[in-house]
Image (cartoon, rainbow, N blue to C red):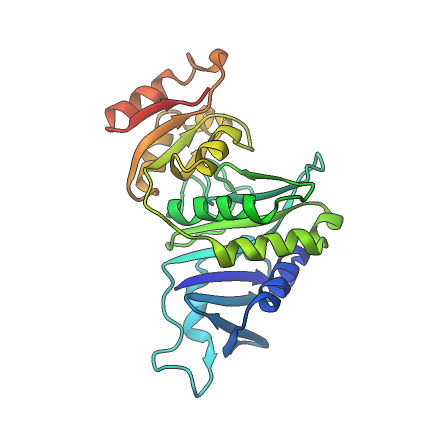
Length: 277
């Protein structure tokens, strides 16, 4: 089961939930407080009344769901992965639809735990990115991975899928529909699993490689994360990216001397190093 988490105080999240419910039949299986919980195939849709960014351990809420009498015994099962449907804020007003893993290589300025990464979901988040690129065809929005950042903390593989970048974007029904369609149509296929290093907040090289089906990406440490923790970023990303075999570096030539020790650590850990120019 994959758990989709929506949030009442997030307008983009509400619109994604509305689009999901309108695209295919869902069955109400219970309630979490005042909010209904729905199931469709292997997907469960849960709505929170509070901001998900700072709510750690969302799967601990599942035993609190009051299931309906016709639900199979055992309540809501434990998910294999969590998908957060959310808004994305860009100070530059960048019109984007994004997917990213969660966690903090260093400080926890926006939820989660400092210096800790929840498990990533490489196959799922890469499948979501590919499906989102397809679903957003014709929309005036770029589709991109973002590097690993922000909370919450949980011990289940998780990722965010988002609509940016301001109030007008969050209310865009077409953008919300593209995200909903991606969630419903994403299909995972076996691919080499990679962790990524370098670049800025948006990571176009990792995005391109994932869209082309070269790799499924787990955690991605931007250049600022490498500056903060150095080679330890490799150990952190590997520990929280199941099945990682490759390390892809998105670094400009001027940055390569500064990241040489990170690259060396990746090789020492047995990863196949790829320079994505």
